[in-house]
Image (cartoon, rainbow, N blue to C red):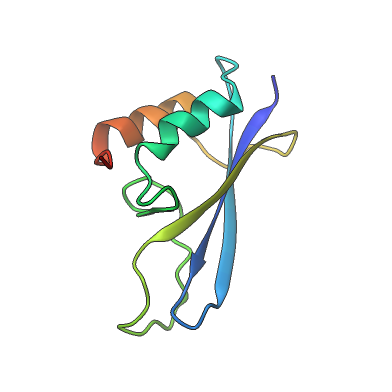
Length: 105
């Protein structure tokens, strides 16, 4: 099965956006729907998360203001043939989220 790309963004108070993505290997051939279902338990209002809790690169701009949010926005998951850009496999990434991030109830 192909790699999995997680796309996300940072949006500041002025609505300027910085986009990023991480490509993981999918060693156990998990389905996108299953991964997304697991991820959504850790998203604030089904959208936002803290990049540092998810061990993802921080996309915040160098110049910030006190009005800027501290969270990042989940955009999408998709299969991809792009090369890996994470040392973690998808399974390791999911385990780290489930271990360290707080589930949103």
